[in-house]
Amino acid sequence: MPEYDFDTIVIGSGPSGEGAAMNLAKNKQKVALVERYKKVGGGCTHWGTIPSKALRHSVARLVEYNSHPLFQELEHPATLTFSDIQRHTESVIKKQVSLRSGFYERNRVELFYGEARFVDKHTIAINEADGSINEVTAENIIIATGSRPYRPDDINFNHERVYDSDTILSLKRNPRHIIIYGAGVIGCEYASIFRGLGVKVDLVNMRDQLLSFLDKEITDSLSYHLWNSGVIIRNNEEYDRVEAHPDGVVLYLKSGKRIKADCLLFANGRTGNTDTLDLDKVGLKANGRGQLEVNGCYQTNVENIYAVGDVIGYPSLASAALDQGRIAAANILQEVCHLRLIEDIPTGIYTIPEISSVGKTEQALTEEQVPYEVGRARFKDLARGQIADTTVGSLKLLFHRETKEILGIHCFGERASEIIHIGQAIMQQTNGGNTIDYFVNTTFNYPTMAEAYRVAALNGLNRLF
Image 1: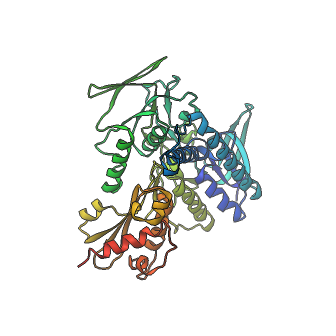
Image 2: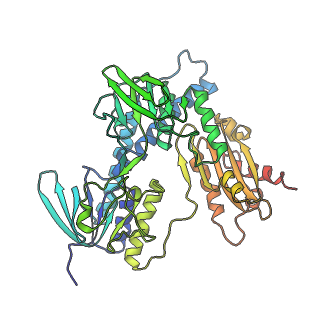
Image 3: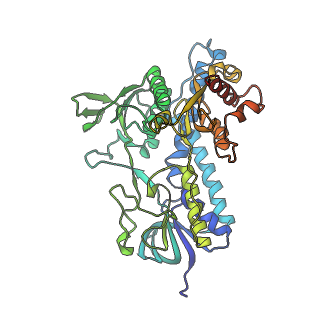
């Protein structure tokens, strides 16, 4: 048997890379991790999930403060600038890096900082910051390099008024007006953030509705709430060109419209970070979006090379990426492929208010001709919602009319991403445990937002005949 420097090399320290490295190291493998940035955590910690959610939290508290009846008598509402909320974000990032660095140290994972590229299927060359090149070998290699914002060639992202979802974190001035091109998850989240800061927002959507993968009632709720807060939503639009000037940006749309603003945030898709890996050296090829194809075991076409996280595309969630890395490591350790992601992965969208869902939508159930019924609970009817003044939002349960099996859960409102997990846990029960009867027969703390499950279940049962 050939001798290698390591059992496994992991490229990338985001959630998927961390999940893989930790599982392997805890099972006595000798593991190396290569990170091209100066600190661990990947895009999730430094530019994506953690920063955007920290920004959102600060703005949501500002909105809550200014709208709460206790503070209505203030002469002037509280205000924050983008730079103000960045300070909280930077402190969270610092804590996350410290926490994750400790994981690698305690589990004796050797860290290399530099740009990784393949030499052959067992060898990685690392271009380090001082210009030196370090070659390391391993029996298995896991690609967990993540993704970056998609940048069309005809837009000048070097201009000081043009941003993507990574570089927007470097925004210093507080804009009066921003154009957000792309109304996916990232675009909608930043639309909420900037509007909460009092910035005029034009949200340009290429489709006919926002976040069409969600249940339509939830989508409609988000659209109404953004519209009611002052966001201008422009559906079925595509850009023709972008003109960036010293005093602002002009977006020309193919429909003939023109929008001028202080700056542009282009948030239309992401690209896998594979272009610098020299994949051709091992016979691999990424698709047009830089993503790699894998089998159910997260193996690429090369048996000892795995890929996990955003670099393989769907579902492109930090939560799922962590599990993908853990599962890929388990498959390496056990030399058998039997672990899989759960079928119903919860979706968390951190707009203001939040959205979270798991399971089927009404549209999917109707198309599949499943006899279902709906149970609803409005937050404004809950005692806890009234106490906390979080009255915007609702919980929606979809269940089978005959078996009462829970088929889908959809939540719009503050803390939705937390509330959803109560229902998710029941959906995973087997042997008849997954029914809305659980929520009727269980005693919930009172007053709580979790009580929405009991209210929604009773509401749904009242519809049966």
